Image (cartoon, rainbow, N blue to C red):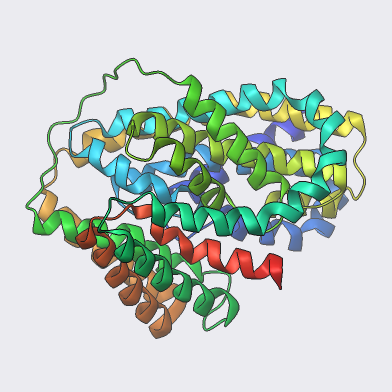
Amino acid sequence: MLDLLAFIFLGVLLGTFTGLVPGIHVNTVVIVVIALLPALLESFTPYSVIALVIAMSLVHSYVDYIPSIFLGAPQEDSVLSVLPGHRLLLKGRGYEAVRLTVVGGLGATVMGLLMLLAGIMVLPAVYPYVRAAVPYLLIALLFYIVWMQNRGRQLYAALAVLYSGLLGILILDRGIISLKYALFPALTGLFGVSTLLTSLRTNASIPPQTLEWEPVRYGKGVLAGSFAGALAGLLPSIGSSQSATLIQGLFGGGDEKEFLIALGGVNTANSIYAFLALYLIGRARSGASIAVKEIMDVLSPADLLFMVSVVLFTTFFAVFITLELAKMGALFVQSLDYRSFSLVIIAFLTLLVDLLTGWRGLLILATASAIGLFVQEAGVNRSTSMAVLIVPTIIYFLG
């Protein structure tokens, strides 16, 4: 029992680390865990190692939004939160932005557990049909993203989709840099550096941050996030970002707070449903579920119940840690000169890209930043840039 608790707490610490540090994804640590499995299983029970992986994955899904909102440094799972989160930060409500993603994650956890029995009964029958429809849904989504723009801006939106899609093909299908870090320079440029550069040009400043938050309707956001996260967790090559783009249409020009709730729900629901997919269809849909499959190839109902228990136990720590770190982040950024802070963050992200991916990564960062600036100058929705992930996903399904 003590071993189990120790591994859960270790997973909480690792998930906090991977969530906070840009460029270090939870899958990076999962690879290390898989490599160490023979040694770990000699000394500890399989359940202890599984608990570590689940705790790490769940905590990461919550903490992941802090750097994207406060630093403009997104990872794949939190990329769409940069713009609405940054807007709230510049209104003095950065803490509230993080809290909204926590509300979404907590709501998605409850929804996921409530729908568990229905999923067990329905999923095996409908899964083949849903999977077959995915590429056509994504193609329709790209057309919808272009069509939903204001008249006169649809050509710019189509160009943004084209440029982002070609960039995605270049880095994901052509493999010009290691797939391990391929998305980091692209997403950092499209959503992080370009946003910071635009803010610098408009002489934005960080106002005093409040730790208060306003009541908000959360039902629509939780439901949308839970549904999109379920798609990400159950279907191959569909990540949190691709499925989050599906719900973008629900919030098109609407409430950014509800949208942040939905994004928080996507990330957490993805983590939970990936384990359900492993139990029901024996397919691993995330780095964490791959590790679990390496430990136990076939899961029993008792194993699923154990994983659900770890999720419930870990959720408390995930929520507490994320909110406390968000408070610290809000108090920290309000004391900084925004222009100097933004320049330091841009320099830090550029250095990190150079260290992880070399000169080719820097070239991708520059190209992606140019596309991100084009999208903002053209006044089209930032979801057009998600073609960097959606187009390669379509090619995967149709290829």
